[in-house]
Length: 133
Ligand SMILES: [Zn+2]
Image 1: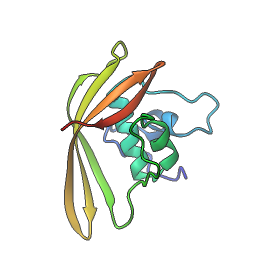
Image 2: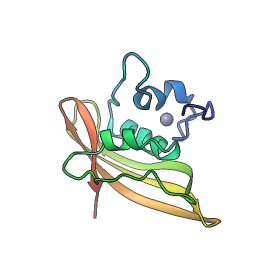
Image 3: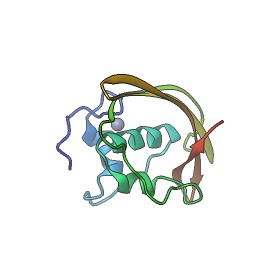
Image 4: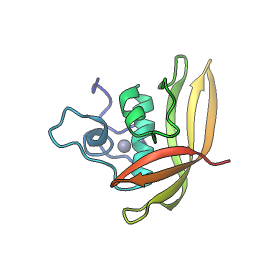
């Protein structure tokens, strides 16, 4: 499950074990929660890359969470993540917005997912709410 490259898939250029790993990997004794909407966004992207549906479900707000979460069926292969902009979403905020482009390959073609995601904090934890329209 954790046999992924040392560099975190989220594009931070940090090692997985000190980047998204502590949020996603529940086998460590003290699971951490991301302190900003952007960190949650990055860790959710990483969870898509490593097909961790459990983490995607946990970090999705209960009011908008799908019943069945699929971390991208084959042949989708996530390539990289670029954060374009963030609004609020800092440790002292209760709402945040993260605009990003996630590139992926599907059927041999490079595709882009450009989304403005909304996040909400409840009881000290950030959750993905939905995509802005
Ligand atoms: Zn990361």
